[in-house]
Length: 178
Image (cartoon, rainbow, N blue to C red; front, side, top):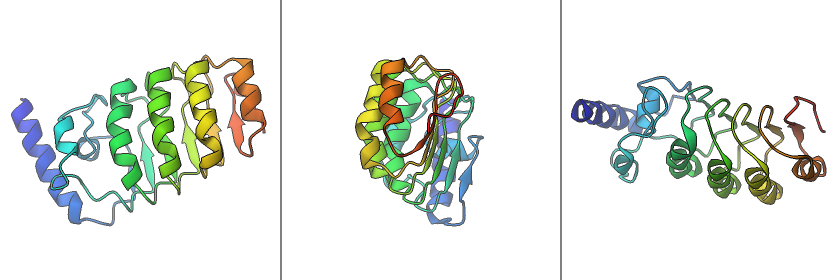
């Protein structure tokens, strides 16, 4: 039930708040729950994320692997609330998560606040030119070195913009641009 799940999330979040040794979250419960994501990656108990009392300590988190969790744009919105606090996060895998242009734009808004993030993988989503342009607009303000966008719907004009940037990019065909 939702009440039991909320109680589990609260208990886990309280425990994680004082645990500073977790460096990797592989997107499996119970750790994803503490970030506000359910077993399938769906957003849950979003109101809890706004509460510092229940938010886990994520400043030492180095890797977040949510490949195939289908978190969608709503899940990206939940993550966007937490990512700026992940000050050590260097690796973010959001492959195959049904993220569209809207989710890419939401992610783009917080990327400049993720100073340690050097690897971002968005393969196999539904990102088109609008989302690609949103990412392009903030990339000069980011520390990213690797950006993976295979199997999206990003057009050649956006890929040309990415080609001009100083980072390794895998495009929609899997070719390395730079």
